[in-house]
Length: 148
Image 1 (cartoon, helix red, strand yellow):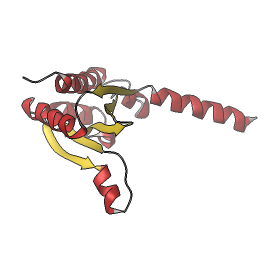
Image 2: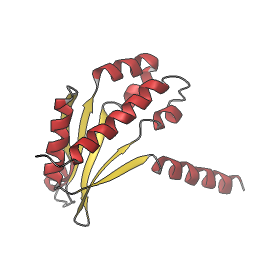
Image 3: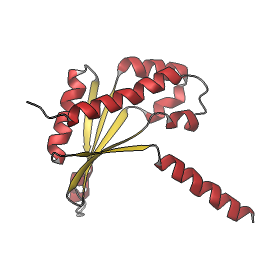
C-alpha cells in the first residue's frame, strides 16, 4: 500500500513540475529563433554565455536528432540577488531557454523560475523570482515579434 501511495505522489509531483514548462511556437527556423533570442539577450545587456547544440553533439556520436539548442544567459543583478538570498539556487543558474524542432514545428520552452520556490524551499525571494520569470517571458515575446 505504501508503494502505491508513493507512486501516486511521485506521479502528481512530475505532473506539477511539467505544468511549470512554458512553451511557445516559433514561426521561424531553429537557427533564426536562436539568433533572435541571442540578439534580444544582448540588446537587454544581459550576459550571454553560450548555446549548447545538442543535435550537433548527438551527430558526433552517430545519432541524428532534430535541431535542439539550449541558450544559457543571465541577468547579473537578478543572479546576485537570488544567490545572496539562497546560495543553492545557483544550481538552477544560468537561466536557460530551449529551442527545438518537433514534427516540423519550432518551439521555445523554459521552466518557470517559480519552481525554485519549491525545489529550494524558499519562503523569501519572491520579487526576484517573479522578475526572472517576467524576464524570460519578455525575451521570448520580443524574439517572436516580427522584425522589420
